[in-house]
Amino acid sequence: MKKGLCVYPGSFDPVTIGHLDLIERGADIFPEVVVAVLHNPAKEGCFPIVQRLELLARACSHLPNVRFDQFDGLLVDYMKKLDAGIVLRGLRAVTDFESEFQMAQLNHQMAPDVETLFLMTAPEHAYLSSSAVREIGMFGGDIAPFVPACIVEDVRRALKP
Image (cartoon, rainbow, N blue to C red):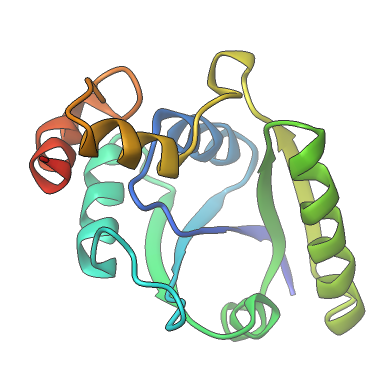
């Protein structure tokens, strides 16, 4: 496994400034970061995966060592396919830690050579989630403070009440 190849998995439905902060910090630490959008057939996303990938690419266009992909199935299988060794996950609160710790342990059990690196979310983003952005936007609230400036209009149009 390549320990320098980091994967940041998530739904990114839509990408928020909190996600972008973690992607930027990951890009500072690792030579290459793959932001991987999970396709969960049991869950209908607000934004189609192709659009999420496009929004992510625009939000991260200033990061030359970041690329984007999609996957379905188990994260450890995707990690093996890429020959990647590091999973990047953000923690907002203690409640995140419980579920993230459990998932990291399960992943480690299935793929002992895959490590999970937790980064604490910047305090100013600790309250932020994609679901909160969707709810604010669907009720006509201002989402501009919560998503990267270059995609605000796209997200606003998609969530317009």
